[in-house]
Image (cartoon, rainbow, N blue to C red; front, top):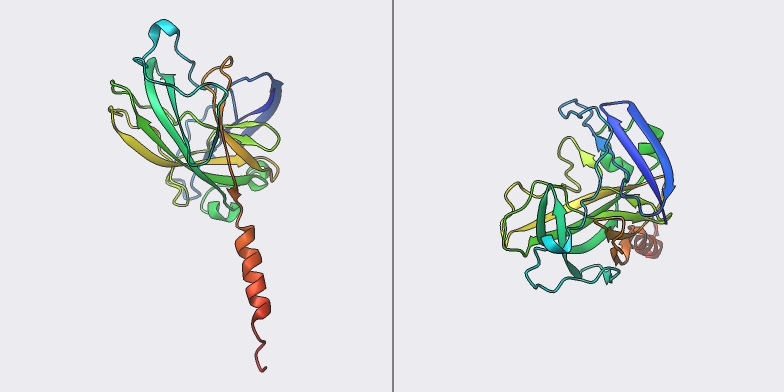
Length: 238
Protein backbone atom coordinates (compact mmCIF):
# COMPACT_ATOMS: atom_id res chain seq x y z
CA UNK A 1 0.00 0.00 0.00
CA UNK A 2 1.38 3.39 -0.96
CA UNK A 3 0.58 6.83 0.37
CA UNK A 4 0.15 8.63 -2.92
CA UNK A 5 0.32 12.42 -3.10
CA UNK A 6 -1.48 14.19 -5.91
CA UNK A 7 -0.04 17.62 -6.58
CA UNK A 8 -0.69 20.19 -9.28
CA UNK A 9 0.83 23.58 -9.95
CA UNK A 10 -0.68 26.08 -12.38
CA UNK A 11 1.53 29.01 -13.14
CA UNK A 12 3.18 30.87 -10.28
CA UNK A 13 1.55 30.64 -6.89
CA UNK A 14 -1.49 28.50 -7.71
CA UNK A 15 -0.84 25.28 -5.87
CA UNK A 16 -2.90 22.50 -4.37
CA UNK A 17 -2.00 19.20 -2.81
CA UNK A 18 -3.64 16.28 -1.13
CA UNK A 19 -2.48 12.93 0.17
CA UNK A 20 -4.60 9.85 -0.37
CA UNK A 21 -3.82 6.45 1.11
CA UNK A 22 -4.95 3.88 -1.41
CA UNK A 23 -3.59 0.52 -2.59
CA UNK A 24 -1.31 1.00 -5.60
CA UNK A 25 -3.20 3.92 -7.10
CA UNK A 26 -1.24 5.29 -10.03
CA UNK A 27 -1.88 8.98 -9.55
CA UNK A 28 1.26 10.44 -8.01
CA UNK A 29 3.02 13.69 -7.29
CA UNK A 30 3.11 15.97 -10.31
CA UNK A 31 5.01 19.21 -9.93
CA UNK A 32 5.48 21.63 -12.78
CA UNK A 33 8.02 24.38 -12.29
CA UNK A 34 8.05 27.64 -14.22
CA UNK A 35 11.10 29.81 -14.64
CA UNK A 36 11.09 33.01 -12.60
CA UNK A 37 11.62 35.07 -15.75
CA UNK A 38 8.22 33.94 -17.03
CA UNK A 39 9.50 32.39 -20.24
CA UNK A 40 7.88 29.09 -19.36
CA UNK A 41 4.16 28.55 -19.16
CA UNK A 42 1.93 26.04 -17.46
CA UNK A 43 -1.25 24.60 -18.88
CA UNK A 44 -3.07 25.86 -15.79
CA UNK A 45 -4.71 22.56 -14.96
CA UNK A 46 -4.03 19.97 -12.32
CA UNK A 47 -2.62 16.71 -13.51
CA UNK A 48 -5.03 13.85 -13.86
CA UNK A 49 -2.71 11.64 -15.87
CA UNK A 50 -2.00 8.07 -14.86
CA UNK A 51 0.71 5.61 -15.63
CA UNK A 52 0.03 3.66 -18.77
CA UNK A 53 -2.00 0.49 -18.37
CA UNK A 54 -0.44 -2.87 -19.18
CA UNK A 55 -1.61 -4.42 -22.46
CA UNK A 56 -3.84 -7.46 -22.58
CA UNK A 57 -2.25 -10.77 -23.62
CA UNK A 58 -4.01 -10.58 -26.99
CA UNK A 59 -2.34 -7.23 -27.68
CA UNK A 60 1.14 -8.44 -26.71
CA UNK A 61 3.97 -6.84 -28.62
CA UNK A 62 6.76 -8.90 -27.06
CA UNK A 63 6.99 -11.28 -30.03
CA UNK A 64 8.38 -13.96 -27.74
CA UNK A 65 11.05 -11.67 -26.30
CA UNK A 66 12.00 -12.46 -22.71
CA UNK A 67 10.54 -9.83 -20.39
CA UNK A 68 11.64 -9.00 -16.85
CA UNK A 69 9.36 -10.67 -14.33
CA UNK A 70 7.01 -8.47 -12.31
CA UNK A 71 8.30 -8.04 -8.77
CA UNK A 72 11.95 -8.17 -9.84
CA UNK A 73 14.29 -6.14 -7.65
CA UNK A 74 17.28 -4.64 -9.47
CA UNK A 75 20.36 -2.67 -8.51
CA UNK A 76 21.22 0.70 -10.00
CA UNK A 77 22.99 0.04 -13.27
CA UNK A 78 20.84 -2.95 -14.18
CA UNK A 79 18.14 -3.09 -16.85
CA UNK A 80 14.58 -4.33 -17.17
CA UNK A 81 12.84 -5.21 -20.44
CA UNK A 82 9.13 -4.48 -20.24
CA UNK A 83 6.05 -4.37 -22.39
CA UNK A 84 4.62 -0.90 -21.98
CA UNK A 85 1.43 0.69 -23.26
CA UNK A 86 1.01 4.43 -23.60
CA UNK A 87 -1.15 6.58 -25.86
CA UNK A 88 -2.73 3.44 -27.28
CA UNK A 89 0.65 1.99 -28.24
CA UNK A 90 2.15 -1.28 -27.07
CA UNK A 91 5.93 -1.30 -27.13
CA UNK A 92 8.95 -3.12 -25.75
CA UNK A 93 11.23 -0.89 -23.74
CA UNK A 94 14.54 -1.57 -22.05
CA UNK A 95 14.76 0.60 -18.94
CA UNK A 96 18.04 1.20 -17.14
CA UNK A 97 18.32 3.23 -13.93
CA UNK A 98 21.96 4.23 -13.64
CA UNK A 99 22.24 6.37 -10.52
CA UNK A 100 20.51 8.71 -8.10
CA UNK A 101 21.93 11.88 -6.59
CA UNK A 102 20.45 14.31 -4.11
CA UNK A 103 20.36 17.86 -5.39
CA UNK A 104 19.72 21.10 -3.57
CA UNK A 105 16.88 23.57 -3.50
CA UNK A 106 19.56 26.13 -4.41
CA UNK A 107 19.84 24.43 -7.80
CA UNK A 108 16.32 25.70 -8.50
CA UNK A 109 17.00 29.35 -7.70
CA UNK A 110 15.96 30.28 -11.25
CA UNK A 111 12.47 28.86 -10.71
CA UNK A 112 9.43 30.15 -8.84
CA UNK A 113 9.78 28.32 -5.53
CA UNK A 114 7.08 30.46 -3.94
CA UNK A 115 5.40 27.70 -1.93
CA UNK A 116 6.59 25.92 1.25
CA UNK A 117 5.99 22.53 -0.39
CA UNK A 118 8.56 23.30 -3.05
CA UNK A 119 10.99 24.96 -0.66
CA UNK A 120 10.88 22.11 1.87
CA UNK A 121 11.19 19.32 -0.66
CA UNK A 122 14.31 17.26 -1.22
CA UNK A 123 15.22 17.04 -4.91
CA UNK A 124 16.80 13.94 -6.43
CA UNK A 125 18.34 13.55 -9.88
CA UNK A 126 18.04 10.09 -11.42
CA UNK A 127 19.89 9.21 -14.62
CA UNK A 128 18.13 6.68 -16.86
CA UNK A 129 18.33 5.22 -20.34
CA UNK A 130 15.34 4.00 -22.37
CA UNK A 131 15.80 1.85 -25.47
CA UNK A 132 13.19 0.70 -27.98
CA UNK A 133 13.72 -3.07 -28.19
CA UNK A 134 10.55 -3.71 -30.18
CA UNK A 135 9.85 -3.77 -33.89
CA UNK A 136 7.55 -0.75 -34.11
CA UNK A 137 7.98 3.00 -33.73
CA UNK A 138 6.58 4.44 -30.51
CA UNK A 139 7.07 7.57 -28.41
CA UNK A 140 5.54 10.88 -27.48
CA UNK A 141 5.09 10.05 -23.79
CA UNK A 142 7.06 10.49 -20.54
CA UNK A 143 9.56 7.92 -19.31
CA UNK A 144 7.36 5.44 -17.40
CA UNK A 145 9.29 5.45 -14.12
CA UNK A 146 8.32 6.61 -10.64
CA UNK A 147 10.36 7.52 -7.59
CA UNK A 148 9.78 5.79 -4.25
CA UNK A 149 10.18 8.03 -1.24
CA UNK A 150 11.28 6.86 2.20
CA UNK A 151 7.61 7.12 3.19
CA UNK A 152 6.59 4.71 0.39
CA UNK A 153 5.05 7.52 -1.61
CA UNK A 154 5.05 7.15 -5.37
CA UNK A 155 6.68 10.23 -6.89
CA UNK A 156 6.06 11.23 -10.48
CA UNK A 157 8.95 13.13 -12.08
CA UNK A 158 8.89 16.91 -11.81
CA UNK A 159 7.75 18.59 -15.01
CA UNK A 160 9.64 21.74 -16.02
CA UNK A 161 8.31 24.45 -18.32
CA UNK A 162 11.86 25.41 -19.29
CA UNK A 163 15.27 23.74 -19.30
CA UNK A 164 16.79 22.67 -15.98
CA UNK A 165 20.52 22.40 -16.61
CA UNK A 166 21.41 20.30 -13.53
CA UNK A 167 19.12 17.46 -14.62
CA UNK A 168 17.71 17.99 -18.12
CA UNK A 169 14.59 15.87 -18.53
CA UNK A 170 13.09 14.70 -21.80
CA UNK A 171 10.02 12.74 -22.84
CA UNK A 172 10.41 10.03 -25.43
CA UNK A 173 10.50 11.66 -28.88
CA UNK A 174 7.38 11.36 -31.02
CA UNK A 175 9.17 8.95 -33.33
CA UNK A 176 11.13 6.60 -31.09
CA UNK A 177 12.18 3.98 -33.61
CA UNK A 178 13.33 0.38 -33.04
CA UNK A 179 16.91 0.51 -31.80
CA UNK A 180 16.68 4.13 -30.65
CA UNK A 181 17.96 5.10 -27.20
CA UNK A 182 17.19 8.06 -24.97
CA UNK A 183 19.48 9.11 -22.14
CA UNK A 184 17.78 11.48 -19.76
CA UNK A 185 17.58 12.64 -16.16
CA UNK A 186 14.47 12.55 -13.98
CA UNK A 187 13.88 14.91 -11.06
CA UNK A 188 11.89 13.63 -8.10
CA UNK A 189 10.68 15.81 -5.23
CA UNK A 190 10.37 14.01 -1.89
CA UNK A 191 8.14 16.15 0.39
CA UNK A 192 9.19 17.59 3.75
CA UNK A 193 12.93 17.03 3.25
CA UNK A 194 12.22 13.37 2.60
CA UNK A 195 14.42 10.71 1.08
CA UNK A 196 14.45 8.62 -2.07
CA UNK A 197 14.84 4.89 -1.60
CA UNK A 198 14.23 3.57 -5.09
CA UNK A 199 12.69 3.82 -8.55
CA UNK A 200 9.68 1.86 -9.73
CA UNK A 201 8.14 0.64 -12.98
CA UNK A 202 4.43 0.08 -12.31
CA UNK A 203 2.27 0.38 -15.44
CA UNK A 204 -1.00 -0.71 -13.83
CA UNK A 205 -2.63 -1.16 -10.45
CA UNK A 206 -2.45 -4.96 -10.67
CA UNK A 207 1.18 -5.06 -11.83
CA UNK A 208 3.67 -6.10 -9.14
CA UNK A 209 6.29 -3.36 -9.58
CA UNK A 210 9.80 -3.81 -10.86
CA UNK A 211 12.07 -1.76 -8.60
CA UNK A 212 15.60 -0.40 -8.66
CA UNK A 213 17.50 0.21 -5.44
CA UNK A 214 20.99 1.39 -4.68
CA UNK A 215 23.09 3.96 -2.93
CA UNK A 216 21.83 7.50 -3.39
CA UNK A 217 24.67 10.00 -3.59
CA UNK A 218 23.93 12.67 -0.98
CA UNK A 219 27.33 14.38 -1.16
CA UNK A 220 27.84 13.84 2.57
CA UNK A 221 30.86 11.55 2.17
CA UNK A 222 32.68 14.10 0.05
CA UNK A 223 32.01 16.80 2.60
CA UNK A 224 33.21 14.52 5.39
CA UNK A 225 36.39 13.77 3.48
CA UNK A 226 36.95 17.46 2.89
CA UNK A 227 36.60 18.22 6.58
CA UNK A 228 39.21 15.60 7.44
CA UNK A 229 41.53 17.10 4.87
CA UNK A 230 41.00 20.55 6.28
CA UNK A 231 41.80 19.33 9.79
CA UNK A 232 45.16 18.11 8.58
CA UNK A 233 46.13 21.47 7.11
CA UNK A 234 48.32 23.71 9.24
CA UNK A 235 46.89 27.07 10.19
CA UNK A 236 48.31 30.23 8.76
CA UNK A 237 51.34 31.45 10.65
CA UNK A 238 52.35 27.97 11.84
